[in-house]
Image (tube, rainbow, N blue to C red):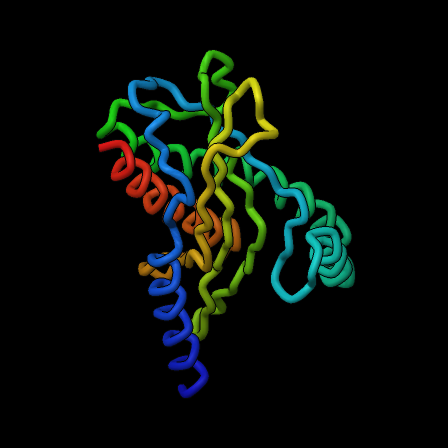
Length: 200
């Protein structure tokens, strides 16, 4: 019980921390009047949980699965990467567009005609766990950068969204993909709110 209470307290801290780390370091008024915003997702240098690099995390999980089911080990790696376009990106874009719709901006990947691009760089993921009687929310850190689509190496403004928690209150987030998807959803809501505020 004490361990469970500690986990719940940690989740509350994560929420409180995440809501305080979303300010853009430069005004984003250059987006005023824009109708479309390109989105690019990057994972360079991603750290996963206590394993360090993403490569190390995948290797450890595959080794664990291989002891019981070699096929499941290969499915894990494939599923880890496929979750991005099939789960994380739609979650992020759905909530981002809901917020940006208030200022008349539609955001999506591969918007070649968009003058500006939002680079969503995931720097850290804690997958968390849910074993029924105990659970630990997922968490993720993001660096958001606004750049000119034609000049992506120059950052016009950036914001860090840290310790974004990911879990479902219904309790059915037994799969890591479900928990991590919620990190992307919450991050999108938070960053959309600050963007809309910056464009008023």
